[in-house]
Amino acid sequence: MKPTTLLTLAAAIAASALMAGCADYPDDKHPMGDGWRVAHLDHEVSLVESTPLVRFAEDCRAVPLGEGQSEPARWALLHFRRPPEDVYRVVPVTGGMPVQEGQQVYVNVNDCAQPLDKR
Image (cartoon, rainbow, N blue to C red; front, side):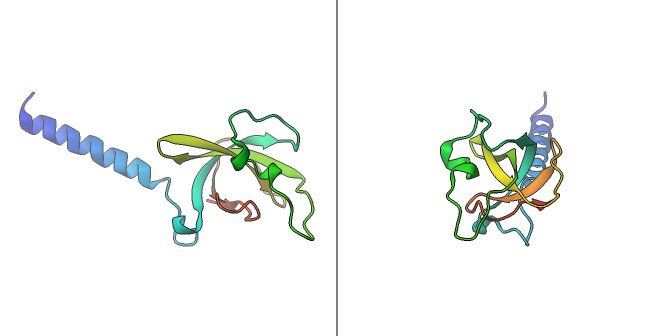
């Protein structure tokens, strides 16, 4: 292959990777600096269901409730990208929000009390 062809191919691959990566960044309403990430819902889980992919620190079911808070009735397993790996997290699902496999949502990875937000 000619050097110019290789350079063009490399530029196209880099642009494609950059555009794919941008799809996983939050918007202005959900700033990354405040802990917001774009996540992909996997499925609904129960309060006591085993989730071996989830580290203890990423399981909101293990976080003590604040005063006046009641135990959420629904929980969801989701994942988001934290290079160099995907991180799995269990989060509360508020209200009647549907949990559909593959659905993208905004999640605050610093605060289990923050509700999921639709993307």
